[in-house]
Length: 144
Length: 298
Ligand SMILES: C[S@@+](CC[C@H](N)C(=O)[O-])C[C@H]1O[C@@H](n2cnc3c(N)ncnc32)[C@H](O)[C@@H]1O
Image 1 (spheres, chains in turn brown, purple):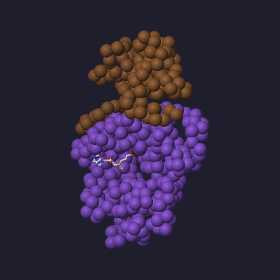
Image 2: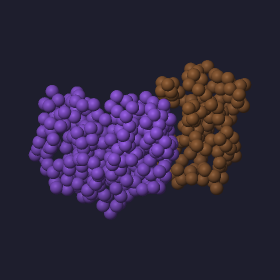
Image 3: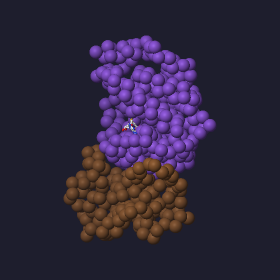
């Protein structure tokens, strides 16, 4: 099995993701982020690279924050730290008003209508949106 | 007005009246399933719950046709990356390229990523696709689409592809060239002035020349555009064939189409060009497309 750095291993396990799943892919650290790529991803010299694969998580003051697109990609494997919200709650957190939820402090996966839509942050019994702007806009316009 | 400008192609488009009729008709709305995020049957069920009309497309089981009033880009399922909104005619070139799993692929002019994300699906998220473009604002949408669809085998790069200095590197190269996009004009058909087409044609030739240089000997290169202009299509391919750098292979597709042209006006392209294909808007009630498949000589 690929030896993952402790910090990413802990992050994946905290969401209940079975590490064996990562076997199919490759995770690597670059700067302040972890990236998920296909195995044996290549790049030849001469290309001005902007990004490769999918950003898994980035380092924040509160620890490693999973990206919303990563949580969506791993939706079927996530079994922990899921916070269910309804339409009004989704619209509310997107507008910047947190909603009360019985959840432990830290980053969570927000689930709406049975779909993991992205990342949220639980703090003192309230959940805040951590969705990227473009995704938040798309969801708020289209979740009706 | 439309007829006047399009009259340029009266002698080469077999059903010219159908072409004129088709440019005034709304095009079919089609989407392509993203297997990286959802099972096909799950998506099909969700689509049927969401849209009034959903039809499977016979020749390609990744594609669905929706009613003409639907706006699938403004939908929750779209935001989750379950599908990509793409014209049916635009789905053909990646299928002709047919990259195998774990291969090394260059999508030379990739933004906003319709064909990149389709190649990623065809390769089952394995191997590597270098998705390159030279326009920064378009790169933003490329990165956003690749992330939304979870294409983990894609490396996004920013280069003027003409200036790349590598050789014999890729197993497959797709060149979806910048073009006059005449096949996508809807209602207001005003063709670009000749001097603009001439400068685009030079760019297309330079890009295709580079595509062949970058490809491994014996590998497949697909050149495509969404325009009718033979100068940008058969003319570009004939120019490369004359240099003997690659040979042309037949494009075999199971959808209505016409063969590539042997000549246009005084320009002779040669019988080999019949191996390329032209898709007109009336074939699929979609955009126009030209597709040629080349094999680099050993
Ligand atoms: C037809 S569009 C590509 C569409 C894309 N393949 C898709 O399916 O979504 C042509 C692209 O070529 C890019 N382009 C134009 N000149 C280029 C060059 N010299 N090098 C790289 N990209 C170029 C443009 O910025 C544009 O995004």
